[in-house]
Length: 151
Image 1: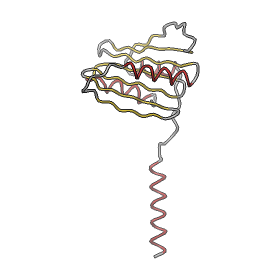
Image 2: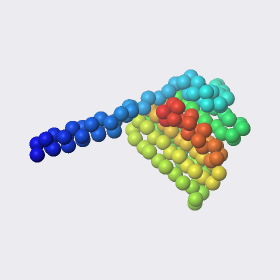
Image 3: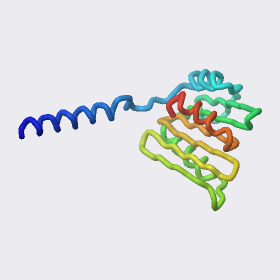
């Protein structure tokens, strides 16, 4: 009986270790890293000047052929990023048929919306915020970019 108990305990411990394989805290990327990943995904990236005191850096990734834009901002602090994320999230136009998914924690938030033919992704990771908007038929390309930066 003790052997079965030990075997069960070992199996549970092994399952816990395997479940956490690849579990790592998310870390924000820099604007330069975002730009590299976006360009590798086929986007054209712009770095417009910003006079906002709330933003440290800002990039816009465009795929005009797919009708897609992903904006990436490094904010001056985490509270500014939270406020920016919440403002963007609250300003997305919704229809009665919109499908949403939401994840919120102190360091990471992600909100996705399928709204008719338009797909939105808003992500906040620590002091960074990213907003993607495009046609729902091209959501895989947008998700590939977000996956590559682990957002």
